[in-house]
Length: 332
Image (cartoon, rainbow, N blue to C red; front, side, top):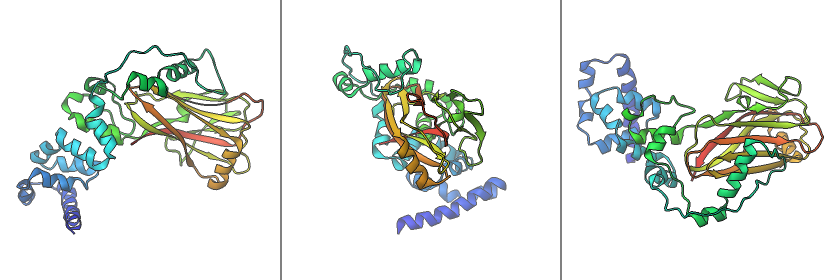
């Protein structure tokens, strides 16, 4: 009942806030002085129902609300309120505590790729990940996710939001909050695509694309896309997904297609998908875009994250798929 009452009062307050930004004057502001007398904890309850744009509007109404919102405690509360407990705990406390690591000598290992380029930087990074971030080594080294406050400020960038130029004027936990809710995407059209000539593979605009441009697989024997996220990805466990679509009756990807994700300081991901699996997905989805979950990566330090799609060992032609983007989503 109390929650319903708060929600109704909030709707009334949001209506006032929107109109006040258009026609604000001293009389209107004096009309809500009762809000300024409320404890900060109560005002915080109101803001729990506001989205990011509403919060910006709210902070512009007066100096008191601006001061309330531009405070680490405000954003720490919001992180705990909106995000799973383990993520909130990690990014308000745990991730900033340095690990007590044990020095180890790690036995060299190779990534279990079907399609290998022995001299490529991508494969070398994958072998390094397999060597230094397999489960056995992580346990022996007592490794944990870690980033210092200084390194977070140095490397944090946003995909969905504009990255501020002066971090020092912004509460640290506000920067953390926006990193946690930010969508971390990389367009397939921004990657290095072998045989991208309009005949074998093509860069196309698509009105339903989340990134504007897509890569369309028309017909090719050697399938290879390689790219990386422009910004460093912070420590955490991330679900990896690819957005794609197929042409019903035209999807042909003989053998196993590998979807690879390799962080510079974390556990790599290898997802192998067979031709029949692609056909089944397309039969279920038709000609619509769909998102395929590829698995998880775990990042222990701020990392450059590379990704690739590979299928070239067999001499058969591949056709019928299009790729929009890859996305990382932090999970508990």
